[in-house]
Image (cartoon, rainbow, N blue to C red):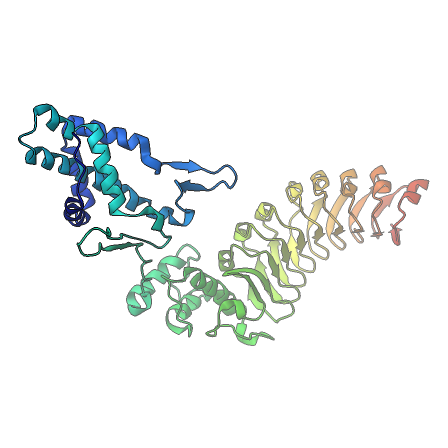
Amino acid sequence: MTHRPTTKHASALLVAGCCLAASATTATAQQEPQHVAAATAASAAEANGFGRRSSAATGTTTTAGIPVGGLRNLEIIRRKRVLAKSMAASFAREQNQQQQPQSQAQRQDTGSASALDDYEAFFESNLFDLRHLGEASMTAEPSKESDSTPEPSLEATPAPTPVDCNADPERREELIMELLEGLSDDIDDPSTPAGQAADFIINGDPAMVDPCKDPTAVVNRFALSTLYYSTGGEQWRNNDGWLGEDDACDWFGVVCDGDNIVELNLERNNLVGDLPSEIKALEEMRDLKLFRNSLEGTLFTEIGELSNLRTLDLEQNGFTGQIPSEVLDLEDLQFLRASFNEFEGTIPEDIGQLSNLKELWIAETDVGGTIPASIGDCEQLESILMYETDVEGDLPPELFSSDKLTWVDLSETNVGGELPDTFYEATALQKFVMNSTDIDGTLTEDLGNLVDLEQLWIRK
């Protein structure tokens, strides 16, 4: 004869069971006799509707009718099942003790796997009604037949309150310095722009950004402040918002996508000085536009770390040295405008790595050497401006590989030789200028293929 638990027993065990810790429950389950453990394993294998299943239609995972929003309460379900098994085993032992007159066979039947399954199902259904499982909480409902007090509500743990690092100035400074250490070697030197910027973020920034709550804002404001101090921000034509309490995304020339700075446009704004390497921290930046300022010095090699850069416009400044080879790491680069500077060196042999390049402008610089054949891999090229440079050698056939090429100007260079046959295949060409060069040969009748050609200037 199988004895099912009564409501009285259930109420007493339910109140006691809800107070058990998970560790204690597990320990109790492990101490059960072997036949009880086997029954527990069998019950777990059946899963009774609590097993995970995948929805092929939606790609989401559900738990036996429980909405996806309630999945974070699966730990509660698991603990409930373990508790129910432990309570069922305890109840079975109690029944055996209370039924001394029974035969030995009957007492064994009371502790059998079948009986345990029934007990577990009862306790499990009374512990929680899964139909009321919500996304934010799962509340235990008291049995209608029970005269016990309502069961405690099990609610989802609320998100922890962010730590206010500004409450401890010393700790705040320590955290800010940790954030900035990898961005500059000069943050400890107050005579450098980076040191001035670090001091501003820690002691002078009216926004008092919390490094715990918004580390991205700390980094953004540091990078921009370094640029400000390095290029005479006080003398800019427009410095609205800079170093003020407003979000850096509201500073003049700064464009954001969410919290990330994606464009810095300070064209014609009287920036004077070096372009600091600290702006490499603006990792999501896509467009850097510094046309017609008075920037000088070399272009920092860390420019290659701005991996999302599409526009690098440095035209009409005073940059010196070579254009760093790290520029070739900018796979998304479309516009490289470096004309009217004092750059030197040669065009990188691997220029073709910039497969998305549309504009290659290095006119009026001291760049020399030959035009690499790999330029043919820049299949998106629309314009090539190399006039008044030290570029030399014959025109490579690969120069005209792009079917989007509309403008080529190689005037006042040492480029020569005959026009390659590929020149007549550049049907999108609109302007071709080679004044004061070493060009040889004559034009052929295939010139008629260039139906969009508007300007053609060729003169030795």
